[in-house]
Image 1: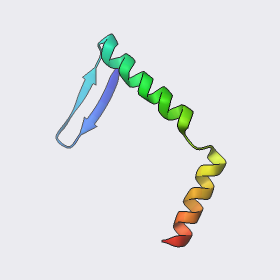
Image 2: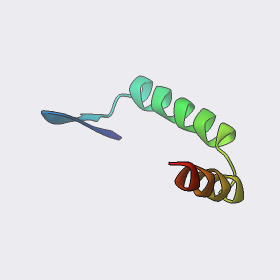
Image 3: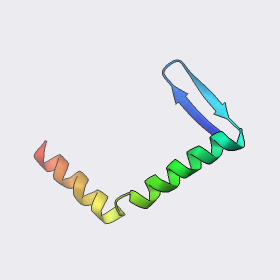
Length: 50
């Protein structure tokens, strides 16, 4: 099941097709995400420059 919120409500998606599409996107995001160390460095640099 996928739960998603938006400004005026929320949706619960439970069809295999919808859930599969969301899992595929999450897998892609996980594979491309920066490491913990890289994220800490990026946030530190951002904080120092803004």
